[in-house]
Length: 444
Image 1: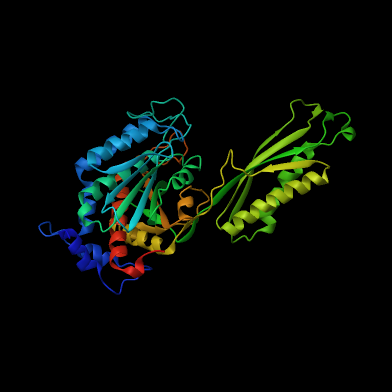
Image 2: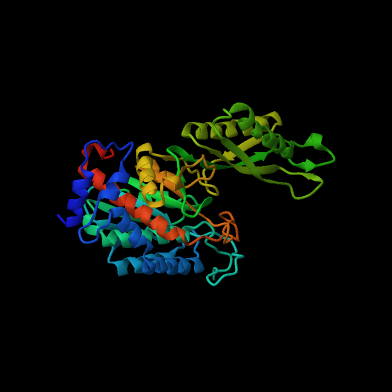
């Protein structure tokens, strides 16, 4: 047993701990390393904020930012990740789900805890003029995934330096295709969650200033699904509508009736959204078409509400089509908009992440987030294992870093990089320590 492991055992084996309220404040602050006179909190934050490490992370993030790649095209990004893992001496598996990378640090035995970062960019032309602007026409990292990769590499560097203290194994998941909503499922299908007890993920957001974080237990991000409906009638000349069966009329009433699902049928205290964002029908002003198509999305926070809304969308469209003597075909298969379940944080892992965050950024900077109508394919991991998702603030009003994700003017505050790296590393280290030394803390 190494000295770091012994120290963790001495200070972490406290029988009064409960997973619902982990006393990380006293434990992380009290754990010291002989010769350093530092707590583990100080060691982790010191490693994360080391000037050499910070500059290293900035270089990596800028390199990835200059070369954004879309879903399942992240070959260069994957190469950067593998290059840096090689330099750190961290073992990994590649390719996973095409371009993904899965690394492991620690003992190689149970317990296993996973940390995840997404890698893909967006089909957006960057409009920000700066030294490291995207070099790829029509592609941009406009949602912070370049930073997510960098923070997880930063965590890998920290964890590799204190690997003798890890009482288990940390799995690092570098995932492709989050923006398409299919990357997590592909990674799961290739076994990345094998033996994993818990998983943790981070997303940089503008909701909070740099240095502040937020999450919530239970329902956090909405589930999102897409639908496309083709309503068919019988075409004809607009001068003689009585000889036609007009799908345009059926489509119009369908759009209006769909709005009643949320406004008149659903509990106003259970937030939901149904949006029709696409209508296609006809090619001439004086011809009633044979068919017309509508499409949109629906969102809800509970699985029950999510699938109830989906069923009502189908019922409403079919009924409105029938009223107007038309037929309707409705597709929820997700070819264009994949169905992503709600992101539901496990309350115990959430509490663990909250306590860790309080130690890294302070209690006053650790917030309970409101519900968010955005969706994340991290939800697929949470359907398989207990875990938690965390928002890490990166808004900087003075520097002008205020543009929302998916904006061509999106700019990320790089001061968030050591914060994310430290939280990742502290979460993994502390989780393994508790899980190893307290059998009642081990998740099923």
